[in-house]
Amino acid sequence: ILNVEQSPQSLHVQEGDSTNFTCSFPSSNFYALHWYRWETAKSPEALFVMTLNGDEKKKGRISATLNTKEGYSYLYIKGSQPEDSATYLCALTSYDKVIFGPGTSLSVIP
Amino acid sequence: DADVTQTPRNRITKTGKRIMLECSQTKGHDRMYWYRQDPGLGLRLIYYSFDVKDINKGEISDGYSVSRQAQAKFSLSLESAIPNQTALYFCATSGERGDYYNEQFFGPGTRLTVL
Image (cartoon, rainbow over all chains, first blue to last red):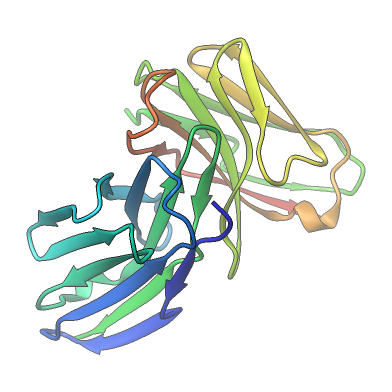
């Protein structure tokens, strides 16, 4: 695992809009990809873990997909709410490494 | 009570001082981690431990040392603090020794300022 990139760096959307952001990585040589949600003044909390190409996970209005062949994962939020405002981190884990991306900061405007 | 606790929560110290940050967990996990967070850089791994006898350097271990006193306790030390070690430090735990898939559970963080 060389580097984990996330885009965009920040995002401002109106309440009710749907949005998505990307985690990209150069190699599929990892065990799992994790998405975390990190609210200001709190600790990161896990959203999803995905391990196989084509994995899709969903929790309420939030879902994620994994494409290891092309080196990306998408996180989708349907009908954004102000409480979705947070930084969203992705992380790749291999045997001896955990590499976090820099995060996407989402602000949902009421 | 929180599953992963860190002490202290905030610390201001001077250059050259020795500082220890402590982490305790009640989740029964084997794997424990120390990260630092700097603005714009995300979380970077300092040290990690798969069990009491297995401690490994992460990507930014220079200037830091760790001690795994028990399964539940993992301490991070700055032997001689310097200003560029000013950051937010997180401890995290996850699963059993051989489990590479589990999510990590984070402590509340320690904000360290080195003057």
